[in-house]
Amino acid sequence: MAQKSETEDKVIIFDTTLRDGEQSAGAGLTVEEKLRIAHQLASLGVDVIEAGFAASSPGDFEAVRRIAQEVKGPTICTLARAVPSDIDAAGKALEGIENTRIHTFISSSDIHLMHQMRKDREAIMDMAVESVKRAKQYTDDVEFSPMDASRTDPVYLHAMLEAVIKAGATTVNIPDTVGYATPEEFGALIKGIFENVPNIDQAVVSVHCHNDLGMAGANSLAAVENGARQVEGCINGLGERAGNAALEEVIMALETRPDHYKAGTGIHTKELGNASRMISNIFGFPVQYNKAIVGRNAFRHSSGIHQDAYLKDHSTFEIMEPETVGWRGEALVLTKLSGRAGLRARLAELGYRLNDEELTNVFTPFKDLADNKGEVDDRDLHALMSEQHRFADTERTYKVGDVHVVCGNDTEPEAGVTLLCPDGEHRSSTQHGTGPVDAVCKAIDSIIDMDVELTEFAVNAVTEGIDALGDVTIRVEKDGNVYSGRGADSDIVVASAKAYVNAINRLLVIGEQDAGAAVTAPTETV
Ligand code: KIV
Ligand code: ZN
Image 1 (cartoon, rainbow, N blue to C red):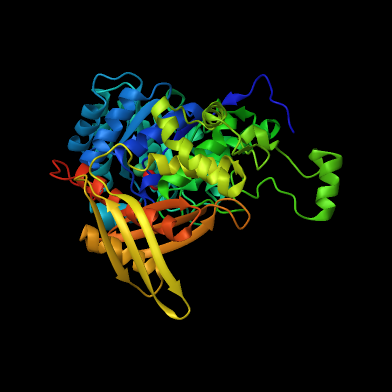
Image 2 (image 1 turned 180 degrees about the vertical axis):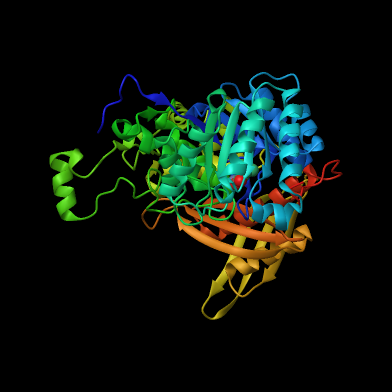
């Protein structure tokens, strides 16, 4: 592994999991969930957290404000279109709080100007400059993005960057909004900016790459090679459409190859695994097995030849030590003999700091699982903690009580479900279905009396073996909005019931967060 050099530059890591990541189709987080993720991002040591888009909904406004108030360490940023009302909402969300940033953006490519904005270059330039000036009234730290920069006429792009820096932008972010650029082209674009924008030394050059052609990470790194010193992205590569650059990949490329990039980060890389698992659990987006850095196979050696060489010397087939990215594999396990102190200590290492009551709540399911499975590893613990965190703090939601099913190849599947309802009552229903999960969902529907459509259903085993916890992901759709739910249990029908109820709870909580909206979600760029 290459050594760090004394003279390497620092690349600012800007995490937008809570903003662009939340734009992933089928994602939707509650304020509490965003806060938990933001605390984990702070433990990871990211420099900037884009906590949301304050003007887009009351829920986003509250999330930005609470994260800015409660999460210490990173700069907390909110996105704003280049219009006064958005900038004012951003300023209000961050009011009175230190270490904050407003990130304002407007489209700059002719394709967007013609078809989306229906404005000419001069009008757009004025809006860009005015928005930066307005944002400066709220905070010194202002970032500006020309959206679709990689398809923008470079001469116009350079003029726009010069003008916004003159107006006070301290970071200029170059988005490859549609993931169209190749690494060579994107590197050249950044080089051109350094060569043609006279005041570029007064701002940090940032990049924000989308992954439509699978090149977001490579494009971000090509930008670093050409002088960019901020990279934006999301953990697990979440984000609009095919997602953004996966931050864990960019970070580990910089950390593993400082000899090549001559740049590093201030990231506590050991927290990457925890961040990835927490974000996957909360978003309800499983991580692909062979995903670089955080996939469950990322450090597993399967072929006999590889195993033999690896056992002689790890460097033969491993370029990073798994521990440096918080990948613990199955080495550390708890058993039914483990006590409260052991469980508490292990959970603290995984980033969950519990008070006595929270520990008591998780101890019983832990013991049940250890009784069933024998050994409980980190993946099980993450799944158990996700169950604990699922809206445990709210009185607006439903909780799964008893679940019974009768099914088989000669029986019409039947499910009986009892839910603890928000009014404190237990209600039960028994229904038939095409299979046990369908019957369970129908029983839940009849108790909650809500019309949702189940659009996606997936079961994964949390660990290996027949006794593994089943991890069910469900997506439901209502009024054109998609909500995800996740549930874990050693019985996959019970896990399905939990996931379905979790999706409905999320729908209720997010709907309530945004109800009576003073602000409505923007559908237009301006
Ligand atoms: O992809 C994009 O262009 C964006 C901007 C708002 C930075 O997300
Ligand atoms: Zn984006």
